[in-house]
Image (cartoon, rainbow, N blue to C red; front, side, top):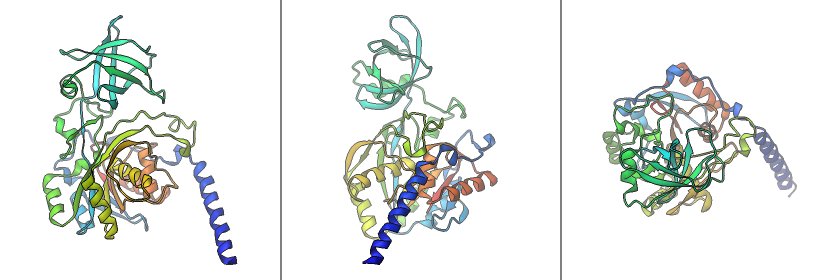
Length: 371
């Protein structure tokens, strides 16, 4: 009995010390030097020829491979999870119906069919009830409803349109970060090859390394391939980036996700059989983990919103492995990678090695396999 009590108090003290340590973590703890010449301006061709740095989570050992070598880390009965969201041209330009003032918005998060949370290009205050006309040759009116609950964007209600998605495809432009060329050579360069579910402002880039041939080889091995949907679009507060709060205090903006019956069934069977679940990208991982956390480690078919924030101290993980592009410094995706990698120092050392070996970073860059 004494030994059990002693163990309990020692363990409790360890957890409290760990929590105190985490609460003091600053965003500056998640950074590294990223030379601008290591950010590719176009996608790698063929896609599966991209470099892949392999990080072994328990030993912190590193290997240098190419993406098509992922097959060597898969076994029959394993499961890879892909996010099948599709990027759409979310940038709209319009004019104020009363004053003629111009406005650029990004359709960031769809709250209902015609109600969107939007980021605006310039810092300004928009009065509820103000109306704008958006579009190129086909105009569509939208009304400002209110500022969102985060204070980071505005809700716009668009007038009735039976073909809103098609209208947006014709009248919008793709959102591209400023460090990338502002016009795509081919729109497919900014999509995964399996993208089917319209609704993201940016692609789940880890999945962009797959080719049809590689997926077919994986299927023939007896590895299951399943899909989830999480529409990428966040309007987070930037307090953590500006060091006004600790890493643990950050709140994530919610994103919409969907898991169907087949995906849930296969994921649960994979775990029950002692096989591995490979999350392809941080969006696939956050979807899986959101559902598992809600349902005591089980995956249930559902549609919901998630603001899951994965930072040091998060456990246990449903996922056994993750592929992620090399993330920018000072971001929640890098925090997630460090957490899944079981060591902030170990993962950042891996990043420094990737810089040394001149890996490509960010959207069109190379990737890391955490296993």
